[in-house]
Image 1 (cartoon, helix red, strand yellow):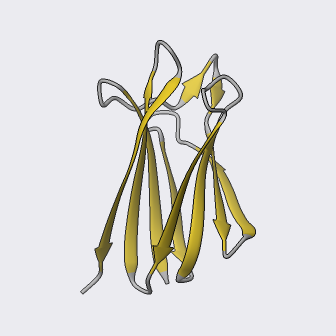
Image 2 (cartoon, one colour):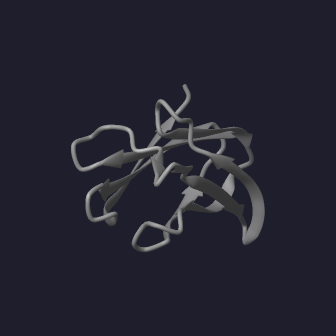
Length: 107
């Protein structure tokens, strides 16, 4: 099994959990099939998915007031991996700036 940690930040590296009072949604697609959906946590702007199976994933950050309304990141996740994904937005313009990933393995 593996873990996925998703963070949504603004351009100042501060958690950005909502736009216009509505939380950002994170979706997880595993091998082409929907697996899970979570709202980011209000204070931290994060969503955590524990004990997911290894395989091919698409992680999506979604909100109707962001541009684009869906930001996607495709990754291959190995057994025992910890995946971190950070979606960074210009909060004022509500525009996606970067998507960064980091993968670590448990010893």
